[in-house]
Length: 250
Length: 234
Image 1 (tube, rainbow over the protein chains, first blue to last red):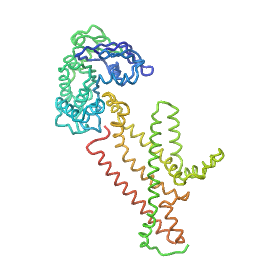
Image 2: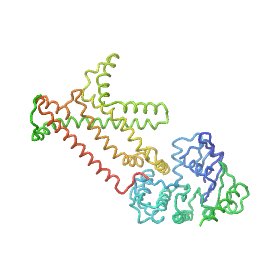
Image 3: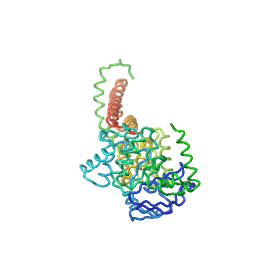
């Protein structure tokens, strides 16, 4: 359903992605794990063209473009098939919670206002924010903001939702409520690609885990294959480091 | 100059007389504001350009204008520039004085307005634009619907200050013979054989002070209304 081939991206002399391949089937929940600076977030941002990859191809639902030659129109078209959930939420600060979700429906998808409000309200109820519709983002907790972010992404009815470390800016208390919402989205069969440092969550929710290191996919497979009994030495080292730190956390 | 006793009772009368020129000051300020904002917006856009020469020209202009006292700029552009044009075969003596002055005021304030806009846009997190793009908005939509309203909220307090500066700046129009509030006051003084300078200038000061005071109050009110319920920056 979503397929990337040979994605390369450099920032100046710093090669961040060195030829990444990834294929995602419909309904997949893919967790991308790896150390900070390994290129996971950049990969995700390339899929939504927030970052322009230097080389490679991207195909979503059979619609294929080459990163090298992609034009504005194609970017706009493919962006319509994905939605992004940001690490620091990035809610529109000048819009209410409800408007954050309706904005894309009304402005981009040209859905009549009343219909958009109904759909947005339904989604916000789903993420447990029915009492915050008219609040501004600044008055919400991080967890609440991120749930709005998820509702905003879902409102686009995208083929795939991209989540960029959705819980890493949250304090531990708020991580749980956000992960629960993501889990519910996954249950609905919506395709997701999640960049995360939450190994337990990845193990729990994903049906496919991809380990990226130094701009390359080192290992991929089922959560058990990658997280429990990884074959590659680099994966083993990364996983063990995680286990160690989790033992020390209270 | 005879030494007449100070008569505070004359001031209200002078205020009313001077206010006869209020429309001129208003036109100068409003027109210069509109043109100044337009030039400032172009400069701010240029300073974000991907092309280096464009950025260099914009910042060169801004630094040049900011470093010149307004009075020097007026003489330079009103008296000096036409001489240059004359040598190039263009006669500028027919240009309307007031229109010319408006353009000079606009140029004088454009640098400050540009810096105000620039810093307001920089205050808005890049993520706001990215989020707008990610839900399929075009860059223009993202700017108009998400970034601009927030940047406007950030700019509002300094916009008020800049407008007050502009109003006070228009009082320099008299140097080329424009009859604005200041020009009118000087005429009244001359008619009165320069005997009532203290009263007339006090009346003039009161008028400028009142205008700026009202603007300041209005601005504070707008800031309150505009930021109601929403914090503009994270």
